[in-house]
Image (cartoon, rainbow, N blue to C red; front, side, top):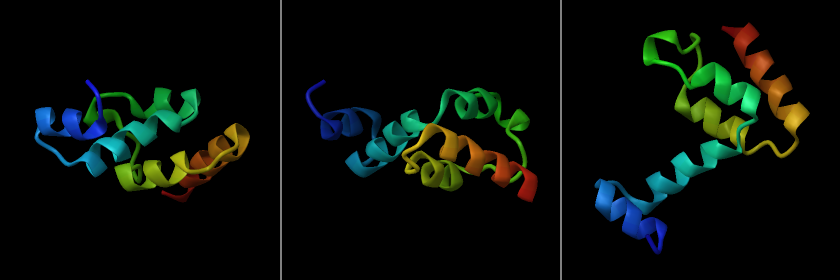
Length: 74
């Protein structure tokens, strides 16, 4: 695979969508552990959009803190 666009074409999605999903890899391992479960076990209030927002937080501790705050809010 040479680019996100090639991967996107192969999977039938846009390059932007591939980039969005790859950005989720920037989530702290503790967060991934909680959300990488069958859909029926994903905690209430957790959405892909919220996770993408968390993935933009640079610091590990800040990211985990924001996730815990999200979990308490719902």
